[in-house]
Length: 357
Image 1 (cartoon, one colour):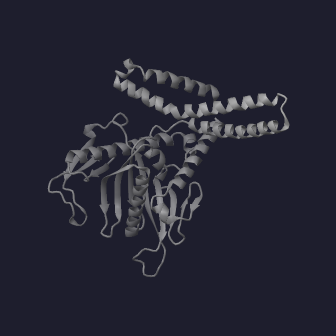
Image 2 (cartoon, one colour):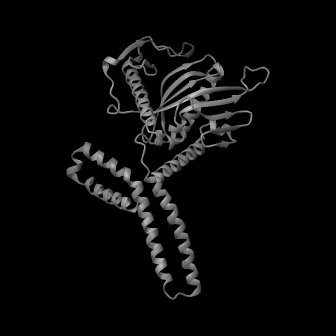
Image 3 (cartoon, helix red, strand yellow):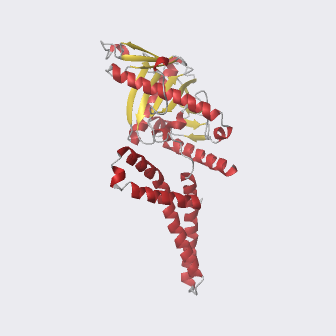
C-alpha cells in the first residue's frame, strides 16, 4: 500500500506543476481534466502526508528511548509513542478507505423517483412523506431541488413524483435509498384505529452525460400535450408538456414542470438516459457475483430496505439492522446517521472483499 501511496503522491506533485503551467492552461479542456485528476488525489495525499509525519515522529521518539533518559522523560516519551501508534493505526484505516475503488457516479447529481406501492391512498400519502424527507435533507446539505413530474392524489399524496437533486456528492449519499420503503401507521381514514402497512418504492439514478448513454433518435417517440395542474391550478394553454417513449424498452418519461416545451423535452431526455444507464449498470453488476456481495443491498426496487413505524416512533434499516427511535426528526430530513452507517458498512464489506482477493 505504501508503494502505491508514494506513486499517488508523485503523480499529485506532477499534476500540481502541470496545472500551473501557462501552456497547459491555454488548452482549457485539457487543463480542466488535469485539475479534476489533481482534485481527486488531494484527499489521499493530504492524509498520506499526515501519516508520514506521525511515522517520522514515532521513529524519532523510539530513537530517543535508546538514549539514557531520566525516569520522567522516559515515561513521557513512552506515552507519546503509545498515542502516536494509535494515531498511526487510525490513519492507516482512513487511507485504506480512501484507496478503495471509487464509484464514478458519486459526485453526480441525481434523479429521485418515488412511487406509491401497496396501500392505495395511504401509500400515496407515504410517498409524499418521503418526498418531503428528501427535500428537507437536500436543504440541510445545501443542494438544489428541481421538480420533473408528479401525479398527485386528491388528498395530497403522490402516485408518483420525480425530481432532480443538484449538489456535489448527491449520489454518494443517496444511492443507498433505492428500494422498497414500508410504513406502519393508523391512517386518518381508519375509524377503528387499526394499523395499516403500506409501501412506496424509491429509485435514485445518477444524472448521466451524453457520453455515458447514446439514444438512437429512431428509437424514441415524442408526444406533446397540455400540462395540467392539481385542482385546475397552473394549467398551461399551450402544448408545453412532453412525453417520450423509448420504443425498444417501452419506457415512458413525461415532464411538464417547465413552461417551455424545449426545456421539458431536455429534462425528460435526461431522465430517460438516467433510467437506461441504471438498467445497464444493474445488468453489469448482476453479472459480477463478487461485486454484488460487496454491496450494502442490491439497490433493487423490490428489496425492502426500511420500515417506518409510527406507533413506536422508530425507523429500522433492515440491511444493517439499525433502529433509531426518532421517527419525527428522521422524516424531517435528519437521515445522516443511517446514511453514515450504510457507507461505513459498505466500505467495510469492500475492504473485506479486497482482502480476500
